[in-house]
Length: 118
Image 1: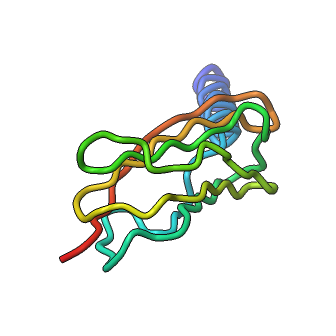
Image 2 (image 1 turned 135 degrees about the horizontal axis):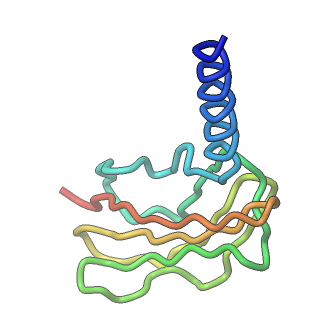
Image 3 (image 1 turned 180 degrees about the horizontal axis):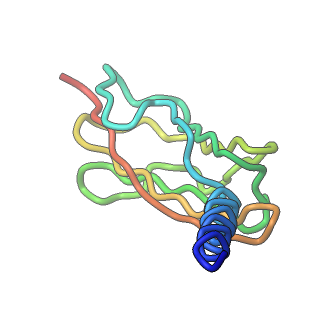
């Protein structure tokens, strides 16, 4: 009897922990893709998340190989998608840094890079 109570308690704790982990807006995919190489600077960077995000508290910044910001600073959010336009720049590694607040009030952030040019 005691053994089955312990197993039930463990199963319940595992279920609750898994439910909370999925409550965060995690990065699903991007365009340009993470680590991808593109011929020229894209017109915009778009990120898709696993949940809807709050527009007022979600941002993207993009810097070029010299560390200079190349985004326009005007992040657009629609549901679980977030985009920012880019100014045309040179070749090299571009770093995308993002911060989001999901509609259930959980914050997540991260960064990735992609290559521009040969």
